[in-house]
Image 1 (cartoon, rainbow, N blue to C red):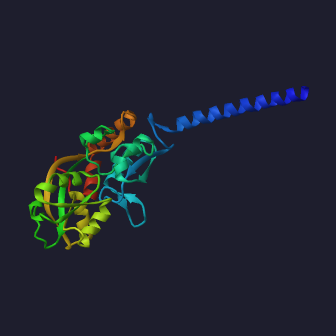
Image 2 (image 1 turned 180 degrees about the horizontal axis):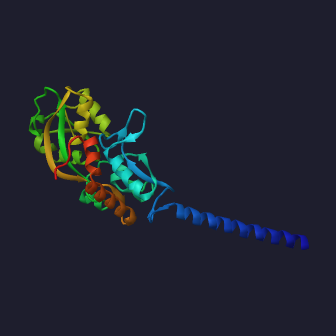
Image 3 (image 1 turned 45 degrees about the vertical axis):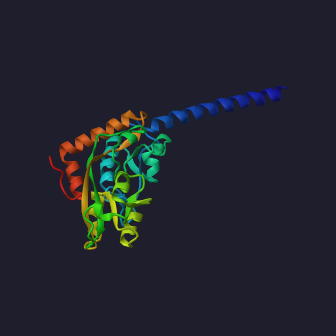
Length: 272
């Protein structure tokens, strides 16, 4: 009995010690996922969801590193938090639905994403950081100058985007045959190989594409849809991070950093 009592006593001591260690670790982990008062899903990292490729906002360079306009802006946020940005490439549907943010897959989303009323229902957006315009790309020499010229023709769009939504509004009226593609690369390839006669997406995306494919294509029409991009965070779940993003944007616009990044990736300084 004394032996059993001793064993029980020893076991109790071990159990208490284990609980103490566990409690200590939990406290440490909890503090590690805090950066300047902001909760993060990974210690020491600002985890950002995006959908590749979408140059000039985010794409991989020749070394495999993800770079772009959005990336450099979010780097400013990470710097202010004293952490490093880590990027997760994920389908755009999971980003725009808010699922990736709500499930803790990432802290924020930066994906050249237009602020819309529908998306605001499932996520919180930062202040606008980019004025976007939709545009139509065709092969050089093609006669298509407007949607009216594409009656009965196949028009490529990227799924789950506002460019797709814009084209769908005129599908019946203009007699368009809308063909959806999962990502920008597939849409571009479809236009190049003649699978579609025209493709609609954001103007800066086509501007970047023309740099890599000079002479082969042309922007034949622009559609001023009044869109603005925003970074997003979990719906009503991370106000501290949203505040930090807005502060970083405001600071960058005030000290000229925003214009420097804009000129590097977009090519034209925004007007005052």
